[in-house]
Length: 124
Image (cartoon, rainbow, N blue to C red):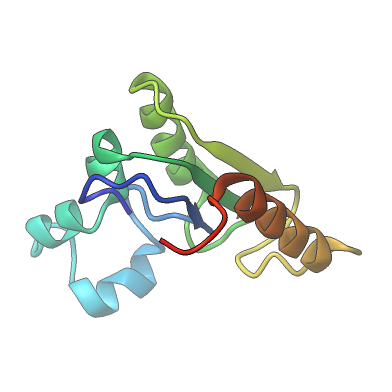
């Protein structure tokens, strides 16, 4: 997300600012005690200062993979750094953001509107 300076527009669904769902993440990365460097390098919060351009973060308040408290750690860090970003939380939605009437269409419209408003027209 932020490892190299960029002025491109980005959007991210549920993020991984500190730890993902530990049970799932440990299958691939082992534990933070065994693999501290892997966890450090995989955590976007450690790259927040490198963010350039626009960022849209979308999550659900009922997220069970990347918990809202973890995502808000990244939000707090971006605020502290004075970074520009947009953050949208769907109430009582889980990882797939599919619960609730109209949610899927709203997510698609949110992303589309964001891209139209933030991507420059024409080829690069």
